[in-house]
Length: 55
Image 1: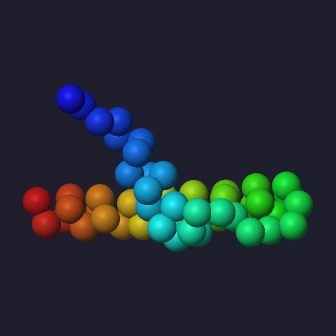
Image 2: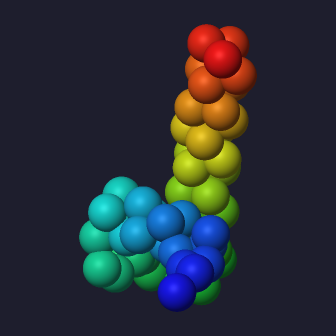
């Protein structure tokens, strides 16, 4: 069985924000999710950069 490469992204964001995004308004919730995506992408980029540097 092959798992999707996307699942770890959602698991990481769930651990960062908890089960719920607790904000007032859809605009703030969208912004918070967007910032979580940026943080994840930056961490992933640094991780991949370290791997390519050592390999």
